[in-house]
Length: 214
Ligand code: TMP
Image (cartoon, rainbow, N blue to C red; front, top):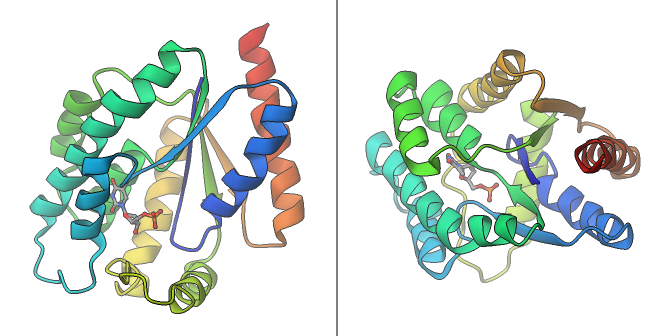
């Protein structure tokens, strides 16, 4: 079972994944938690290139191909082996992020991105994708608080520096994708307290996992 989390900056994906996984493990599911970009040794280097604040000269095509390079390595080293071993794979972002960030928000051709996505993922598709949805102003406020607290670390804020309009396109892009494939996507209201959001996510994910098992 392959589950992905998506959402704008500051939507709380990593916090919610960290809370979900112990619950699933307690229920007996073997889980592998992973993310894009940066889940592999090569991917970590690609992540630094992609998110480095100083790389403001990066053109959209370079960005697109680097995300795809990270993904190819990620699938080969992490996702496929875990799925073959019957694990539940939970990834913080996957190819929908490319469609939305590089397509809907950066404006690269969506057909071109879809062809590239197909080439890289080779038929691998999440069984379930949760979109943590909230207003962009709130998400960005949370994201900047996190970045300011990352003492000493390389500042990974190239995307947070984008305009509100860019992030609004990302949000609307995710909602558009959910409309195209309602059976795969679940939109989770991520604007409130983490506790009820967590309970909502646990309910959605366990329902799907049990349906798959039966
Ligand atoms: P993160 O903040 O969730 O770790 O993601 C890093 C950034 O990379 C985030 O701003 C979204 C962006 N991104 C893309 O633009 N395209 C992609 O394909 C992926 C996976 C992430």
